[in-house]
Length: 145
Image (cartoon, rainbow, N blue to C red):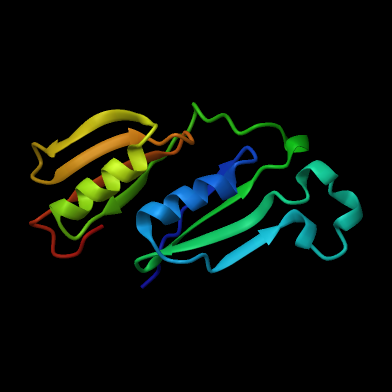
């Protein structure tokens, strides 16, 4: 079966954000590539962007959360215009609480964590990096989505 692996664009703080996500989810990065690591591109990368992230990947369960920094010459990513959210299905309420409290620290809560009308334990927020998340546990789901 196919898996879906979210990919996020950042304005120069991908490494900081992913260290934060790693502190909440645990695990280790499976890949970190900096712009300076691109063979043949060394002379084309401004010194101010050489250490920024071209690709970073953090496994979370069966999926991988990935990201990069958008080079300045491409213009900034508008952090207030995300059109999607990352949805995390947890194994139990305790895990929902841990993830929600960890990831929402310093961010903006859009829907406090609670038992929802549709039967799941659910919360929604924008983290301190502007990324939107939904975290839930559905005790009736056979396969968490």
